[in-house]
Image (cartoon, rainbow, N blue to C red):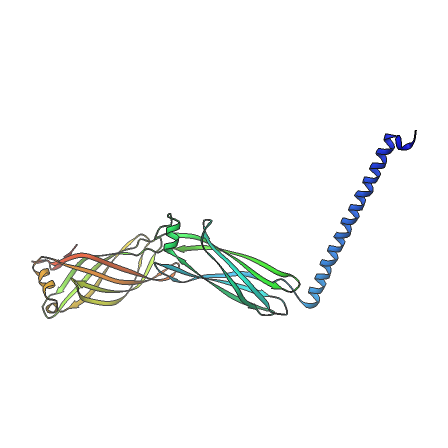
Length: 314
């Protein structure tokens, strides 16, 4: 019987061929690994020779230069360092601000500039959050609350030898959703009452509806009886209105009753007359400076008769 007819010989020959094939694959794998290592080594030598390297970046700071009831302006400072002997272009900046995994705002800044050779640049990324858009999309975000945020930035740069590189960055923090303070005129106290000049004071109650303290610096206001403006001023007063807390203020003013006609006579006769107050408070917060509006409309006041010369308001 020929050896080719022997099953054991055929099996042995098949194993030998498979082994030779496996050895061939291993040799090719080793060869490609050596080529890859060689190319990387050559690349490193070139980098060392001509000084090329990958740039680095970091979110240096997040600023809130403007916060009011409508929007928050955010500026993200990104520090980029270029270790290379030539300038490198910053091709694109992709950014995203999210809260609890929900997108608040995103955008793209194309052709964002150039990073100088062997230098560092701070790139400022301006972002605006519109509160109405956020509250209409996420109904659980309420005015007066503080929400967490995460800033995600992808910097795309073009570096010789390396090509296009994406540098991913992140930063977390908190941002407020401000609420307008409530104001109430508790009473008007008349210190001196005459037709030529009346000295009085407004007793105000300010109610902070926010989950953060308001450090009051000043208050500007205008006060009307009926449709007549009888007092307006700016009062510099320093106090802290604690979060979800209340404070009272006394604001002195003077006016000439004879200039106000029937509104004044209605108040004197006990009929009452309408009043309103509008203005702004200038406050410091943990998130920066804010100027918040205050207003009270639709109240009425009258002058009490007898020993008590305070004006009742309601």
